View (cartoon, rainbow, N blue to C red):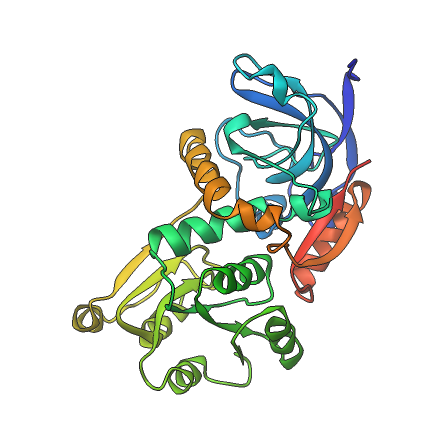
Length: 332
């Protein structure tokens, strides 16, 4: 198949507000060894991309300056070492950058097949949240059937994916959200309990909900002064996992409380991790979670779609904080 030489992409020249996200012409990227070129049908929108647009989160070394970390589309060209049968395959993938474009390159090991049970828009909304929640809740916090988990930002992309996985793998999930409407939305999606953190003390409510025992896991994307409050929510031998620091980079923690309750504090960032790590993670997800996707039992919550040319509108919606679930760009 003959490919054009150029494509439309969102590749801002300088940091700024959503208005810097305008389509420009860029050369189509070439897949290197172990990579595939994907004709993008849809691209997920994520909080780190908003931070990158503002100049607060530079892409990792070697990543394209074009925004976007997750795609769905069809493989149209192969790099060296990729089997020929991959051509034409519908895939979704987690990538380090380049998703807001008509074509993007992805390591073949980070690609997952798109089954008939989900649309390309749904497929594009899965990789970043699924990779993040799986690696942090099930690998770093070793969640098991019967555990209780507290997740902040229950109606975010991460929060809604955590709710789905909790339901599939036997966890009881408590979420926080910033309004009664969002709490109701989280419960409709499948949260067992939802706490309005603006009108309720989530520490007191978690203790009340759990009969004083606390939760086994906290998945935290706030950081700052939430961390010591989160530790109060944990049961003995509880695990606290940090995945973002929207509320602050520093926290003061009570060491003796960690010792007394034998708590574990951990966390991770996914974007800078190696292709090898992400490929292993994709393989584990393909074996453990993807059967639910293929059966139509795991689908992301889609808030709203925007055409690629209106990436600015997508970012403005995310920054407004009114979304429930994932915001997705449609391409072509």
